Amino acid sequence: MEEIKIACYLSPECASEESLHKNINSALTAEKINANVVIHRIDEDEAVALGLSGSPSVFINGKELQPQGIVGFS
Image (cartoon, rainbow, N blue to C red; front, side, top):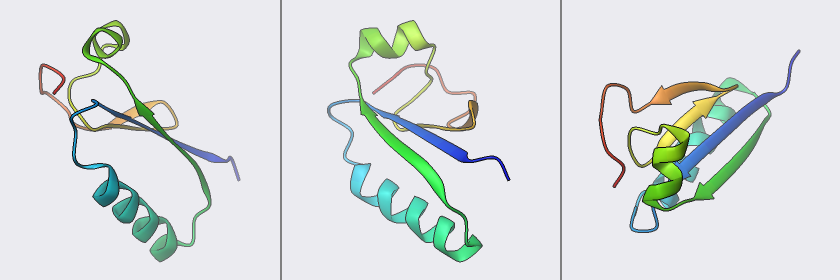
């Protein structure tokens, strides 16, 4: 089975990091899945350069999971 890679991008002001960790860990435990989880704190310029649409932005194996259809990074 291919290793699952989860990349999360958060703005410096985003207060969701603790709940994001908790939710990801709960989901991985419930599904009995191992994953490489990386949290990135980035500024708005980096977010724009990466084409991110919100904070947090969550990607699984390179595919955006959340958010979708939102413009701006805050």
